[in-house]
Length: 130
Image (tube, rainbow, N blue to C red; front, side, top):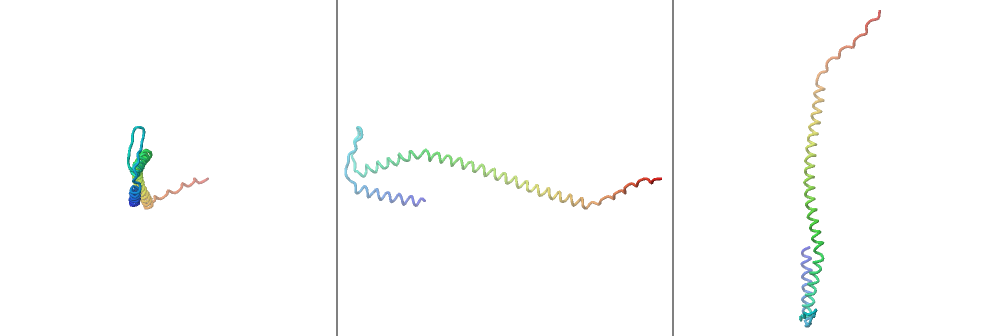
């Protein structure tokens, strides 16, 4: 993109030089009590430069606002990425704990299955009727 701007600047500079060479007539500009004499091309180029400066002054508040908003958004993104990393770490810890608990439950079931069951006492017999 910088190359495009450089080429555009060179084209504008060449046009300005051609314009200055073709418009060498001397003119006088009067404003209230001031009077300025110079070549037509110089006066027009100075007027153009003043117009560009005024345009930049009108654009600068929005550019500054955009820059500040972008800075705030970058800070927010950084904080959210940090929070995401913490949540991922916590989720991994919980997943590891779940695996340990499942293994402990399986071990407990296996230990209970391996334990011999005590014999069941025989149910009491009802007394004989006379």
